[in-house]
Length: 175
Image (cartoon, rainbow, N blue to C red; front, top):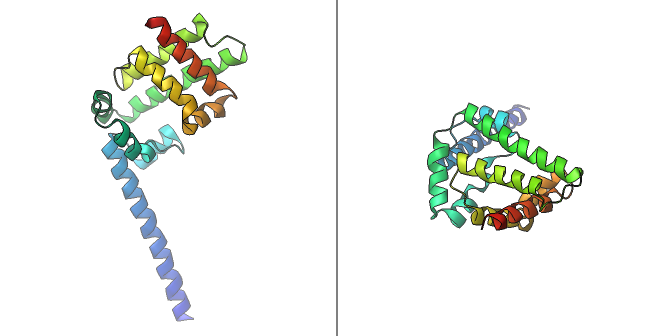
């Protein structure tokens, strides 16, 4: 009996230790990405989404770019309140995109392109300088990368394609 009890205690301790290691690793990833929030604050702001989850991929793809460096510099100084504001801004424009889609507003209409421009300005204001042609590339990624597509499709079916088309139309309008 004592051996079984000891084994159970050791397994419980091992599980707690593994959970602590995972929490420390997530915190290290978040700090490397420039997010200086506690795990509790990150959950409050982002919910189940972990911004550090794709950090290695982002650094591999864009780590040598000016936009990446600029984003890391800016976000390193953000507080929880900054992240709450930025997330609210993003959620607001996404909700208005979804409302336009559901109202039957064409994605290449002036109204949809104005929303796309607001989205581009949010990126420029909060993360990195995002000229129209770069934003057009992001728009394509919203339908080419299933993770982005899934994000938009959670809000409204067809939204990923709608936002992509609006963003690309806005980029063309400005070129």
